[in-house]
Amino acid sequence: MTRRDASEFARFVLVGVVNTAGTGALLVVLSQVMSLSAAYTLVFALGLCFTTAATGRFVFRTGVSAGSALRFVSWYLAVYAVGLAVIHVAQREFHVSRLVGAATVVLVTAPLNFLGGRLAFRRSESTWRTTP
Image 1 (cartoon, helix red, strand yellow):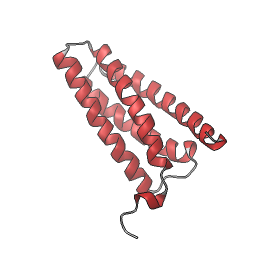
Image 2 (tube, one colour):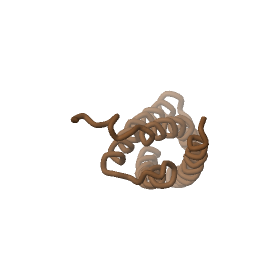
Image 3 (cartoon, helix red, strand yellow):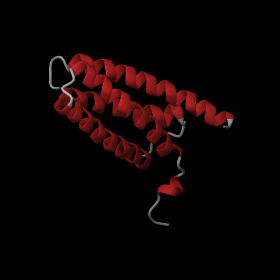
Image 4 (cartoon, helix red, strand yellow):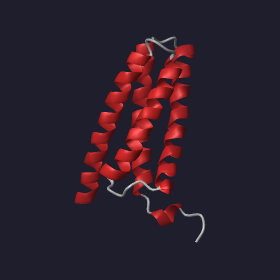
């Protein structure tokens, strides 16, 4: 691992911790006054705005172009679907409490967002182009 990789990794972890802690806490609070799915949707959207800007600008120091934002948001939307599936299974199949459901969805989606988001911003622009 190069020094640059290590620095990016440390900054990504910091952004991930801030985003996960903030949205996780907000998810727990909001799930007490609305459905867990609605609370998850709201905090997911807020977290997506924060993490898209922070990952491009702070973590990889590349800025956020329309293309990089679209790639990043696309990945996160796939993870969002995974999160909704986790909520569905946790509540409907295992009958867990809202608190356990919220913790479970964070534990499943945070690593996916970390890994996929890092890969999305680390790819070169030419890797993602569909036309020459």
